[in-house]
Amino acid sequence: MDYLQIQGPTKLSGTVTISGAKNAALPLITLTLLAHNPVTLTNTPEVADIKTLLKLLENLGATQTLENHVLTLDTSSVHHTMANYDIVKTMRASILVLGPLLARFGHCEVSLPGGCAIGQRPIDLHLKALEQMGAIITIHAGYVHASAPQGLQGSHIVFDKITVTGTANIVMAAALAHGKTVLTNCAKEPEVVQLCEILRDSGIDIQGIGSSELTIIGTGGKTIDMVDFEIIPDRIEAGTYLCAAAITNSTVTLENVRHDHLNAVTAKLEQMGCRIDVTDTTMTLHPAKELKHVHIITQEYPAFPTDMQAQFLALAIFAQGTSIIEERLFENRFMHVSELQRLGADIMLNGHTATVSGGTPLFGADVMATDLRASSALVLAAMASEGTTNVHRIYHLDRGYENLEQKLRALGANIQRLKE
Ligand code: EPZ
Image: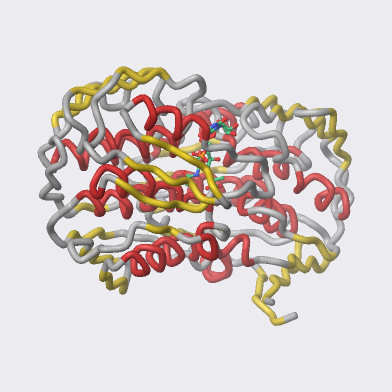
């Protein structure tokens, strides 16, 4: 297995180009299951989760090429409808094939994703909504067996909780359903918005895009003529690099970024004393003279994103005073805390709240990545720690960050990928 060796403390400078959004690409890849034409997706991030999902689609019979961030997908020859465990277990977002496969073929078998490090990650809301649309759902031997022989029927669905991939799955199912579907209490993440925009541009009548209520008129089972498109920039990768600049007290510019997708993150960085200049496609962070403590509460978009919680917890270690980090979405998303404590951080955990006493210096040590965003928090802290830090199990990082060490090295970090 690989690990990252990082020498700190380090300063960064220069410009980093942000890749396409993993969490936009995943549902957009499964959306192609609704299309009868080949589709080209540009700005596709070449990260492990994308390659895993493409392997799943190939197993179903799709053909694809991905080179230089251009993905061409043709699902017209898909003939299987079973998403098997050996792939789904490595990436729970594989559940995003459920809605499209059921809508297009009238039946499918998708392995239950299983939990992951940050939480149990249930899919009850996905299944309840599909049942309300007329699907017959049974769970047997670790698989969801779904069938809708007469096709799915439009319905008024109210989500008990806001779910990002749940909203995506049902939007895709509704696109091919018979009649009108109204979805209330939808997720409004930019990744969901882009999915809805692509459906609209592909001829689907969808109203309320970007709001918490969507109205979709389905095609009654007819596949769509899907448009080609460019995947939006990854707002979480962008936020991670903003934190890299802030934590190393550096001025860094991000290119190919949508600052309007990062308002909650920008607000917190400015509260901590940083200044951020923006243009249509760039963001430049100017570091704080002295980082101020912060209070973070993770909630659904447009509030502060849970996927930036670990990075800000690392940043808070270098702020003056006591910071409070509240994780409201996932039940176990503080595994980076014990690893940061190995570097010397003074953090107290109490249920869903971490209290960070800032200002204690960190010293390099061996630490272990536990999940995607926790891993990036360890890299950030390592760059501001005194000495050598080895971050192990970085396959977690490779799931969602494209060329992380190359991008950081180009900014001046002393970081290299080594073999255990
Ligand atoms: C998406 O996960 C993202 N993944 C996650 O990013 C992100 O952390 C999360 O949304 C929240 O923003 C992708 O988009 C591929 P949810 P998702 O359904 O859709 C509960 C990363 O780092 N829930 O919005 O799985 C659930 O337990 C990943 O890139 C149910 O109870 O998250 C959680 O508490 C990590 N029943 C809350 O809702 C359900 O059926 C939000 O989960 C579904 C969800």
